[in-house]
Amino acid sequence: DQQVKQNSPSLSVQEGRISILNCDYTNSMFDYFLWYKKYPAEGPTFLISISSIKDKNEDGRFTVFLNKSAKHLSLHIVPSQPGDSAVYFCAASPSGGSNYKLTFGKGTLLTVNP
Amino acid sequence: DAGITQSPRHKVTETGTPVTLRCHQTENHRYMYWYRQDPGHGLRLIHYSYGVKDTDKGEVSDGYSVSRSKTEDFLLTLESATSSQTSVYFCAISVRDQETQYFGPGTRLLVL
Image 1 (cartoon, rainbow over the protein chains, first blue to last red):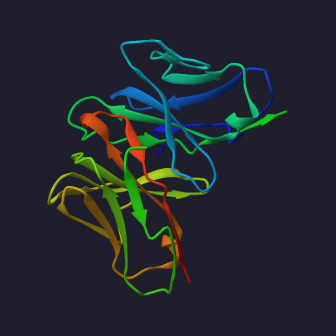
Image 2: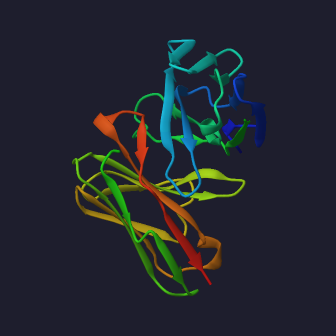
């Protein structure tokens, strides 16, 4: 029973174009969502997050959109750069009393071609 | 960099042997987590700690135990390693008791 789903195992885009990575969740108790980026042989690094009280959060080239009714979030990277090539994980945390535990999706491998 | 180190970074061991992985943090954060990452599974929580001597199970805790005798160290033990525990293990901390977790560099474990 996968509560956080990233249905695209991989995505390939051209440098300078937009990358859109998608994530769906099933648990209505999730109210905080995060994106992590992971390069090979390194630990995941925090990228951007969004609380359920918002529908958009932006940080430079990265924007996360949240559609609570659809239980869907997406990460937009504009413009995409070759250095963005990595595995991206979506994660979610439930409200109160969870000890800040995160549930992760399986990840999407983004390849940005020069 | 949240001041997290993991040791060893790489380990090869044989089935049936005990293995202990160490996570060390330098900033006295209360919450610490152990994950494993496997192809096709993403990151899965093994155990976590919410204080010294306070630990609880995660999603995939069978075959693993943990200990936290001091704030800065969180140990993950495989009592009798099996080939199914071949994986990359990541430690993480929650900074300022928030949902955002920061990860260590990982330990790559191979059980033969």
